Length: 200
Image (cartoon, rainbow, N blue to C red; front, top):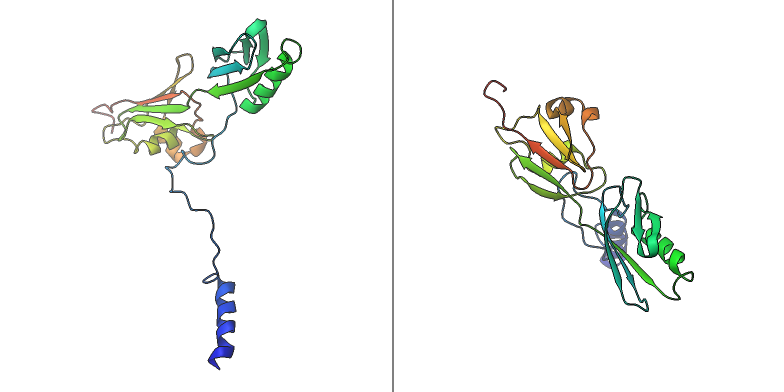
């Protein structure tokens, strides 16, 4: 009886997922809200990049560049390329196609992005820089920084964008209406000021 019953129990356990487990990928630790997910290498206006042109007869050429307001970068031999909105691999392929075979018989192109962060400072519990990921907003970044401190003014938060463009945001209103939350971009800086004595 036991010998006949044992396989049926095993099949049942397999069906329920209790037994017969197969090795799988290890789970990653949970990440702070707003900072998780897959990163992206889509290039953006104002972003700093390095473009290395190697395997050239004259040696390697390294360009340290900032993507201009029109989304372009200019490289060796005054060649311009639209970089904004493209992945690094697509831009690398376009650069190589432009130079080979028109200018060189061989070339390796490597595009590197500056490491992406947003900065949260002022009266939050853990002021610091935090990795940028797509979909990151002001409230999510402040949450990642431990939330507002006891003295943080939620109504007068400042966002400093690329080019020192400043924006004021009422985070208290955005908490009540998430549509008022604002998207962040790499390099953005958030500052939470101290709450005034008569501003609870």
